[in-house]
Image (tube, rainbow over the protein chains, first blue to last red):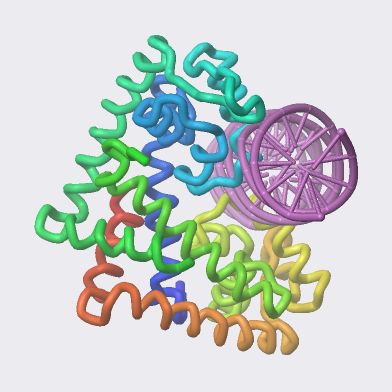
Length: 142
Length: 142
DNA sequence: AGACGATGGTTGGGACCCCAACTATGTTAT
DNA sequence: ATAACATAGTTGGGGTCCCAACCATCGTCT
């Protein structure tokens, strides 16, 4: 198979790596009956109690409209609670419920195992620099 | 904003970087009226004349069913031609038409500009190792 | 030849995503 | 006070993706 310039271009390899990693985490989180997309969402809410949906969408790199069904699902399953603010009745405050914290704990365990595998592939020596580059790409591609 | 463990985990940063890069390339390729997903597809067909859809889907990291509408669209717009094989009348042979080669040239120019920006962010010194790590992740996550 | 299993491609259903338009609420300016 | 504008969230439409089921063709085994 001839990949031409794709073989040594960053964009293509970035995509392939990300999809492989996502796929692997997806299988892992499926074992505990959760969708992988829920993990980042739940973590960010847990770490930022009372966050609004729009703030959450920015932190998560998603459009706010993408979050509507996700949050709806988390609320329906009792993992997140959603209250209108008093001062501004347009916005919601999101919080993780005790049940949500439990789920998050399992998911975090999953993620840690997943991370260990990736760390092994990356190698401890390069890990820090690798992540720095990823962060720069995310921040500066604009 | 508190990202908790997400901040230093590979998976999350990989996703953010990939999506930023994809988004940037998407804007670029939109200027010439093409969808970014067409680029890898067209390149692989051009580099592997007569490839089948299933082979293409593997090279591309997609399910073969995902390619049905993509190839259909490329054929409809005259960028790719599709012929049944004689020896095996189940499979198609895909080839890029002259019009397709033209489009591919524009897309490649786009991609080169895009790559230059990313190279600038990564830094020439780390580029090679960075790509090696991405390749290993794609290959070994299994 | 006929049956069975493998393979290439398509179809249908569901998940997740973005964008544009919309509703409801808040804020600012006159 | 009220009109104009801004912001939080939802809705609807379209794109891309995966998976499971399916159709047609091929190869093999008897």
